[in-house]
Length: 143
Image (cartoon, rainbow, N blue to C red; front, side, top):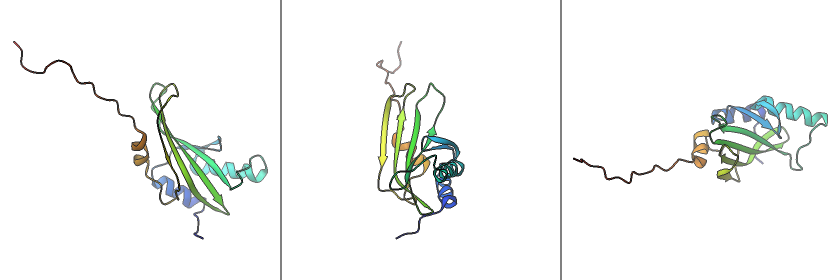
């Protein structure tokens, strides 16, 4: 059995990969990565929250947000906690328009903390580039 990283190491690995924004753990507990997970773990210990049977929980963050009028990219991590170690089971990346309609979605399964892609690679998977419209007029010299 391989050794899973503790919370500090887990947070450092994700931050080094570029995931350094604000997170929500289990649909609540907003804050920076380590703060959010710590609050969630305290709530679990106090009996306010409980994780899944396999010890996993949902960790969400915005990868790209440029206001309400532009598309957003959200990343959901399914994190497994075992003893005092953390590992990522899967990632789901979604790009939605300003109305919440799904533009593109990508799901990565069978991951480990070392195999997750960087922030730029994740954004590139779901980025929607608008097609350039070609002019129907002939381009040339006219008299």
